[in-house]
Every structure is written in structure tokens, then in C-alpha cells.
Amino acid sequence: MEPLSPRSGENARNEFSGPTAYQQNGEHQKQYNYFGIPTRVLVILLAALVVLAIVAYLGITRLLVPSVSRSIQDPFHVDVRAINEDLGGMTWVFQDAISLDDQEVIEQLDPDPSGSQVPDWNYVDEQITDLGGIRVPLFCADPESPCAGSGKYQIVLTGNWDQRVRIRDIEAVVQERSPAPSAARVEIQGEGVENAESIVFNLDADEPVALALEDGLLAGNYFDGKAIHLENGEPIPINVTTYSGECWCRWEIIVHISTDGIEDSITVRADGTENGPFFESLGVYPEASDYVLDYEYDYMVQRFVEVG
Image: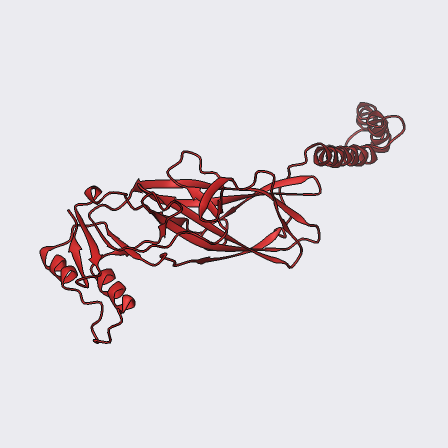
């Protein structure tokens, strides 16, 4: 290989002569500077402005919209317990047809198997339940009207906020409706009427509202001109009663609250949570003819006899 001549080297130098790398970078840097602010600093400033704009928007939204989601700490604790109160009587309904053998068991059922002259209604309950009967509490607000099937619960709300919580309304929402059981009814009639203060819901209504119960009679909307107030740590027991003559209902309640101008609605189900199992209530039809079989306890012969 022949060595490069000086001329060739000079041509090469002329060919590649031009701005140095340092000069090129300098011009590139000047090209992307604005108002004398380096690009990196400008990006940081723009990002900070975007964050401030978002924070300002959220703050204004919170001021303008009083109904917001509640904090991590719920406004109250909830405890729920079922109330088994039959107003002096007992009722069972059957979803499935009763066999002839089981009919005979009911008709010969002795409420006093020990001969103590005192009926053992717990024993009767066990025997009928073993046959497939479902015991149903009754709601008897009007002595002149047939009793209806009922669900009865005591819901204890305990305040959990430093601020006083005002319960503006409670509503029942039926999530599932099925026909009430109608294969058979077995009944020990009672003469009691409702006497405990309670919020009552008619589950046969399209939109059940909270009704007041005063002196055993229904008396209009419970929350008309009235509210329930919860103080921090204070438990408030609320009796909730439902009634139906036709519905096997699965339902929940919605508690509407307000405090310091903020409103919220909280769902309560049978286990005291928002997402647990529904409350459940069985209707009892008013007439014996609504059932395939209907038995009533005869106090004279101390046996269940078929009605109709």
C-alpha cells in the first residue's frame, strides 16, 4: 500500500473541516433554550403547574359539591339481630307439598308430650320445622285486618364521628321478589298487637317508605318532621319491621345521613355490612283458601285441625 501523500492528507482535512463537536453541541443547546431557561428546568416547571391545576380543581369541586364519598372511617358502627316475636301465636309455612304421612304427624301432634298440662311450644316448633315448616313472625298492626308475614330486626347504630350525624331518612329496597310459600300453613293464633316503637316497611309496595308505628297502629311517614341523631360512641337501637301478604322478599336498607352540610347514603344488610346477605322476609297470605293445606290449632281438643 502506498503511503498517503501530503496532498491527500490536506484534502482530507479540508473535506472534514467545519465546526467542532463542542461548537455543534453549543448551537444545539442554544436552539432548544427558551427565554434563557434550560429545557430540563422548563419541563419541571410545566409539570408542577399541571399538578397545581389538578389540586386546585379537586379543591373547588369539594367545595361546590356537598355530597361526597365518606371518609375511610364510617359514620357509624352497625349491629343487627333478628327478633323472634310472634305476638302470642306461632305460624309456619311450607314451600313444598306435605305428604300424607306428614299430614298425619301434624294432626296427631301433642303439644304436651310430658303430660305436665303446660303446652311445650318449643317442642311443637321442632316437630313442625323437622317436617319442612318455616317459622314466620307475624305483623298485626290492625286488629280488624289479618296478620301478615313479617321480618323483625333490631339495628343498633353507634356514632363513629366526632361530629353529630343526622339520619334524615331510612328506606327499604327490595332486591329480589318471589311468591310467598303456599303449599301449607300451620298456625297457632295469637291475640297480640304490635306495641314496640318501630320503623315499618310494607314490602308489597313498589317503593316501601319508613312508616311510624304508634299505639299499635301505622301513623304515616316516620321521618316527617323527625330525625335521628347519633353522637360519637352513643348506640341508638332502631326496631325495623317489615310485612307482606304475598312476597318472599330479600331486601336491604339505605340510611341517608348528613353532617356539616355533607350528605351520604349507606347500605345496611343482614350482617351489618354493605355487601353481605340480604335481609329476608316471608309473606303470609291472608286467607286459608290461599293455601293447599291450612291447619289451625284448636285449643279445645289441643290438636291441629284442617281449616276449610
